[in-house]
Length: 105
Image (cartoon, rainbow, N blue to C red; front, side):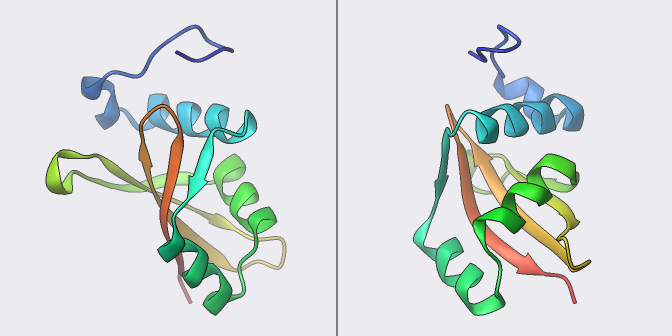
């Protein structure tokens, strides 16, 4: 349940980009985020830091959604301070799980 909105995100809501993006932003803001080892490796390789990731989540938009293996994945895309277009693939549970990070150059 979101502390700010008092709403839970249900499986049927996962297809609603607006609902999902607000949930992702809320969980990021409250620190309920996990960055998987694969995403950390990709961040190092691509010169992306946590501040870049935060900016993408706070100001980006969902550009793709899929459901491999019964778990929804959402691709959030945005720009870093220096103008690079970056995408991060996330899953939602009771937290945001950063699966991977992509430099869209």
